[in-house]
Figure 1: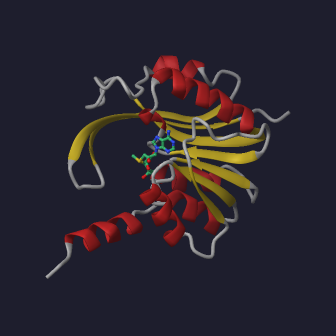
Figure 2: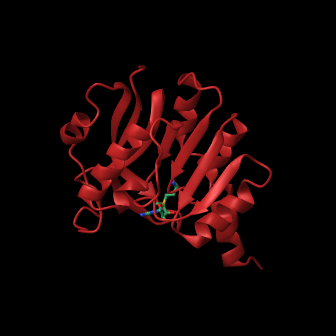
Length: 195
Ligand SMILES: C[S@@+](CC[C@H](N)C(=O)[O-])C[C@H]1O[C@@H](n2cnc3c(N)ncnc32)[C@H](O)[C@@H]1O
């Protein structure tokens, strides 16, 4: 008989890296360097980046997420760090790539905005961001402890950057539990201008 806990763990550990990252990473012309993965969850994106030549600082506040990431990224150049990314020191000009898939929405709007500003500064000139935030039509949009953006408002944050993709997705999307909810996501891929 199958064990539901073991099955869930397998599902979590086998989750592939986000398409947003796997579709765009090969086109970013990044060859090595240090990547930051904010809210790494079970470590799929960190694993992908390490297997593609990067050193990765993978941060998550959840002990379980860090345990999954550590297990998944054994032997790879991934530093799995348990902590709150609102308080994590981001060194200016240190990272070549910053990834935040589905994690920034869990901050209040002003916290999200301030972290985005710090992420911009933490990237090297020519470095890239690959991230997702949620739009106003998301099923959870009435939650006060999360952030939701209008596309036009979000776009303003990236003026002066080379925006390679800024796409909206609206539709059903499965959670890790298997439950599907209506999601409104804004996906961004952008490069900091070279100095
Ligand atoms: C929906 S999961 C996404 C995980 C992974 N990036 C993915 O796409 O599957 C959001 C993750 O962000 C983490 N997170 C949320 N707020 C955080 C914070 N303030 N500091 C660090 N991690 C946080 C959660 O613990 C969770 O693992």
